[in-house]
Image (cartoon, rainbow, N blue to C red; front, top):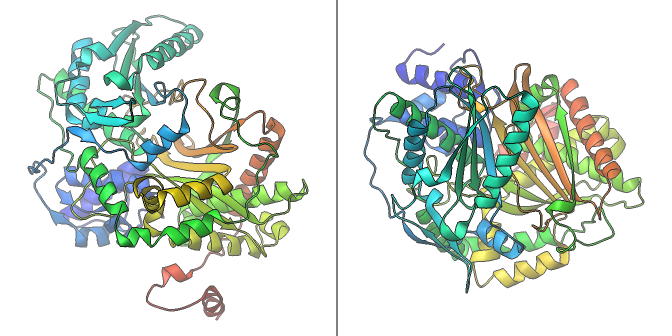
Length: 572
C-alpha cells in the first residue's frame, strides 16, 4: 500500500481514472487497463494536485512507486507563462486532410450527451460555458475558406456564451417523447454550426424540472475538439458550473501550450532533416500490395454520409476486461496491437473465402497526435483537434490463418509482428502527416503514393470512457446515449470500411464497442457482419486461452536480438 503522500495521491488517481477500489504501489497503470489517452488524463490530474510528471514518464515508469520516485512537486496554483494563443493558426495535417476531403464541412462535429444536476440553472450554466470559451482558445477558432483555408483564434471575450445556449423544457415528458426531442434539437444545433463566423459550440440544456436530473448536449465542431479534448472539457465545465453555483468566480487550471503554438511547432518540425528521413519508410508502407474489399472505387458524389451503412458490435465485459489488461501485459504491448492483429486476420480470412488471397492489409490508423516531439510543450490541458492519421502495413505473410484464428501459436506470432511494426513507427506516426501536408519537398511524393495505393480501411481506438461513473452520475454520459456525433449528409466518405472502437464503463464492467461504417454501393451488410464476427470471435477466443505472450526486439533495446533469438531464450 502507499506510504508517502505522493504515492497516496498517485494511487488515488490510478484508482479514480481506472474505476478501481484501490491500487497498490507496484501495480502498473497499463496492466490495470490504462492506455495512452488515459495517461494524458493522469498527467493532467497529477499536476492539478501539484505532482509534476510527463506523459513519457507514465510509459517508462508504469507503477505508482516508480512514478512517485520520478515526480517533482510544484504548487497546484503555480503560474505559467502563457504563450500567444490568439491570431492566425497554421493549418495542421488533420485540418489539411479535412480540406482535401471536400464537401460541406460546417456540420462536421463531435458531441457529448451528459446527465446534469436538476438545479443546473441557466445563469450558472452560462457562466460556466463563458468560462470554457474564454479559457480554451480552440473554441474561438474562425475558419475562412476563400481564397484559401485560414484559421484564426479570436481574442478572449469575442464569443458570447448566451448566444450559444438553448434551454428546452422536458419536464414530465415520457422517455420516447424525450428521445424524439433530443434528436430534433441535436439536428437543429448541428445546422447552426458555422466555422466561418466562429460558431463552433452549441449547448442545449434539456431541463427536466427542479427535482429530476436534466440532460446537456454539448456539440462542438471537429475543428476544435477530439477524443482527448472531451476528457479536459467536460471536467472543466463541471468545475466551472460548481464554482458558479457556490457563488464563486470560476477559475480553471491553465493550459501551458496553446493550439496555435503547437501548430507552429508542427510546421517547423516538418522541415527538419530527421522528419524528411522518414519519407522512405512511408513510401515503402504505401507500396505494400494491399487489396480492397470491393471491386469498385470510392465515388465522392455517390459515397457520402447519407448513403453509408453502419453496424455496431459490443464485446461483453468478461471478454473486454482481459483484452484491456492481462493480454497487453502478456505481450508487453497495447490493446491496439491485439485489436489490429485480429482485424487483419479477419480481413485475410474473408479474402480467402472470396478468391482474394492476400496476406497484406493496409490500414489508416488514427492516433491522438499529442506526441512528445518538441521540448517545453505540454498538451495535457489543451483542447483542439490533434488527431494524427497514418498508414500501417499489417503483414501476415507465412501466418497459418486457421491456426491463428483458433488462437494457436500462429496468433502469438502475428501479434508480435504487428506490435513490432507499430512500436518501430517513429513517434506513433505523427511524421506522416507532417511530410504529407506541411513539407513542400515531400508532399507531392506522398500524395501521388496515396492516389496509387490509398488504404481502404481506417481504424481508430478512442480509449476508455466513463471510467469514474461509480462516483457520481452527474456530468457523465447520460443513459440515453453518449454522443450525437457526425457530419453533413453530403460529406464524402473516405474509406471502404471505417472502424471506430471505444471502451465504455458499464455496471457490469468495461465493454468494447466497435462501430463500422461503409459505403453501401461498395459493401453489403453481410460482408461487414462476417468480418466483424470473425474479428470478435478471435478476440473472444484469445481472451479465454492461456496467454503465451512474450518479448519482442523493441522490448530489449540494449540488446541486438532477433525475434528468433528471443523465442529460443524464452524456451530455455
